[in-house]
Length: 127
Image 1: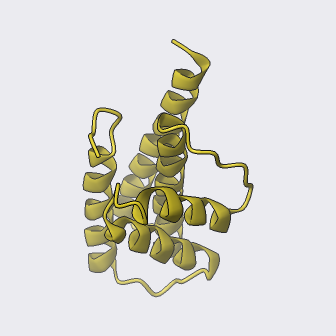
Image 2: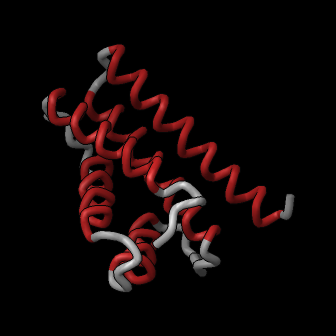
Protein backbone atom coordinates (compact mmCIF):
# COMPACT_ATOMS: atom_id res chain seq x y z
CA UNK A 1 0.00 0.00 0.00
CA UNK A 2 1.28 3.49 -0.82
CA UNK A 3 1.69 6.28 1.75
CA UNK A 4 -1.26 8.03 0.10
CA UNK A 5 -3.47 4.96 0.58
CA UNK A 6 -2.27 4.48 4.15
CA UNK A 7 -3.19 8.06 5.06
CA UNK A 8 -6.59 7.69 3.39
CA UNK A 9 -7.33 4.48 5.30
CA UNK A 10 -6.10 6.03 8.54
CA UNK A 11 -8.46 9.00 8.16
CA UNK A 12 -11.40 6.74 7.26
CA UNK A 13 -10.68 4.54 10.27
CA UNK A 14 -10.63 7.67 12.46
CA UNK A 15 -13.98 8.68 11.02
CA UNK A 16 -15.58 5.28 11.50
CA UNK A 17 -14.25 4.91 15.04
CA UNK A 18 -15.43 8.38 16.01
CA UNK A 19 -18.88 7.80 14.52
CA UNK A 20 -19.14 4.52 16.43
CA UNK A 21 -18.23 6.43 19.61
CA UNK A 22 -21.01 8.93 18.94
CA UNK A 23 -23.53 6.15 18.48
CA UNK A 24 -22.41 4.41 21.70
CA UNK A 25 -22.59 7.72 23.53
CA UNK A 26 -26.12 8.33 22.23
CA UNK A 27 -27.23 4.88 23.36
CA UNK A 28 -25.63 5.42 26.79
CA UNK A 29 -27.34 8.77 27.32
CA UNK A 30 -24.30 11.05 27.13
CA UNK A 31 -24.82 14.78 26.82
CA UNK A 32 -26.02 16.03 23.44
CA UNK A 33 -22.99 18.34 23.25
CA UNK A 34 -20.59 15.41 23.58
CA UNK A 35 -22.46 13.38 20.98
CA UNK A 36 -22.53 16.27 18.51
CA UNK A 37 -18.81 16.79 19.09
CA UNK A 38 -17.99 13.17 18.20
CA UNK A 39 -20.36 13.32 15.21
CA UNK A 40 -18.72 16.48 13.92
CA UNK A 41 -15.26 14.96 14.21
CA UNK A 42 -16.43 11.84 12.35
CA UNK A 43 -17.46 14.13 9.48
CA UNK A 44 -14.26 16.17 9.77
CA UNK A 45 -12.06 13.07 9.46
CA UNK A 46 -14.16 11.79 6.55
CA UNK A 47 -13.69 15.12 4.74
CA UNK A 48 -9.93 14.91 5.30
CA UNK A 49 -10.03 11.40 3.82
CA UNK A 50 -12.01 12.76 0.88
CA UNK A 51 -9.32 15.40 0.32
CA UNK A 52 -6.65 12.72 0.31
CA UNK A 53 -8.62 10.43 -1.99
CA UNK A 54 -9.05 13.20 -4.58
CA UNK A 55 -5.64 14.89 -4.06
CA UNK A 56 -7.28 18.08 -2.83
CA UNK A 57 -4.74 20.58 -1.48
CA UNK A 58 -5.62 21.39 2.13
CA UNK A 59 -2.79 23.16 3.89
CA UNK A 60 -4.80 24.53 6.78
CA UNK A 61 -5.00 23.85 10.49
CA UNK A 62 -8.33 25.63 10.95
CA UNK A 63 -11.65 23.86 10.76
CA UNK A 64 -13.19 26.83 8.97
CA UNK A 65 -10.48 26.46 6.32
CA UNK A 66 -11.31 22.78 5.84
CA UNK A 67 -15.01 23.63 5.50
CA UNK A 68 -14.16 26.34 2.96
CA UNK A 69 -12.01 23.98 0.87
CA UNK A 70 -14.71 21.29 1.08
CA UNK A 71 -17.30 23.75 -0.22
CA UNK A 72 -15.05 25.08 -2.98
CA UNK A 73 -13.83 21.69 -4.25
CA UNK A 74 -16.88 19.46 -3.73
CA UNK A 75 -20.04 21.51 -3.23
CA UNK A 76 -19.60 24.45 -5.62
CA UNK A 77 -18.34 22.09 -8.33
CA UNK A 78 -21.45 19.90 -7.95
CA UNK A 79 -19.46 16.79 -6.98
CA UNK A 80 -21.53 16.55 -3.78
CA UNK A 81 -24.99 17.79 -2.89
CA UNK A 82 -25.18 21.05 -0.91
CA UNK A 83 -26.91 19.25 1.99
CA UNK A 84 -23.48 17.84 2.94
CA UNK A 85 -22.13 21.37 3.33
CA UNK A 86 -25.10 22.44 5.44
CA UNK A 87 -24.74 19.42 7.70
CA UNK A 88 -20.99 19.95 8.11
CA UNK A 89 -21.49 23.64 8.86
CA UNK A 90 -24.38 23.02 11.28
CA UNK A 91 -22.39 20.45 13.25
CA UNK A 92 -19.38 22.74 13.27
CA UNK A 93 -21.44 25.58 14.71
CA UNK A 94 -22.94 23.27 17.33
CA UNK A 95 -19.51 22.13 18.46
CA UNK A 96 -17.82 25.50 18.54
CA UNK A 97 -20.76 27.32 20.14
CA UNK A 98 -21.21 24.44 22.61
CA UNK A 99 -24.92 24.00 21.98
CA UNK A 100 -26.37 21.85 24.76
CA UNK A 101 -30.12 21.90 24.15
CA UNK A 102 -30.45 19.45 21.25
CA UNK A 103 -33.43 17.14 21.54
CA UNK A 104 -32.41 13.47 21.50
CA UNK A 105 -34.92 12.49 18.79
CA UNK A 106 -33.48 15.07 16.38
CA UNK A 107 -29.95 14.07 17.29
CA UNK A 108 -30.76 10.42 16.62
CA UNK A 109 -32.15 11.39 13.20
CA UNK A 110 -29.04 13.48 12.42
CA UNK A 111 -26.76 10.62 13.45
CA UNK A 112 -28.68 8.17 11.25
CA UNK A 113 -28.45 10.55 8.28
CA UNK A 114 -24.75 11.13 8.92
CA UNK A 115 -24.08 7.41 9.12
CA UNK A 116 -25.81 6.78 5.78
CA UNK A 117 -24.01 9.69 4.12
CA UNK A 118 -20.69 8.57 5.57
CA UNK A 119 -21.17 5.13 4.02
CA UNK A 120 -22.03 6.74 0.67
CA UNK A 121 -18.64 8.49 0.68
CA UNK A 122 -16.68 5.24 0.57
CA UNK A 123 -13.73 5.19 -1.82
CA UNK A 124 -15.73 3.11 -4.29
CA UNK A 125 -18.34 5.87 -4.66
CA UNK A 126 -18.53 7.64 -8.00
CA UNK A 127 -19.25 11.36 -8.27
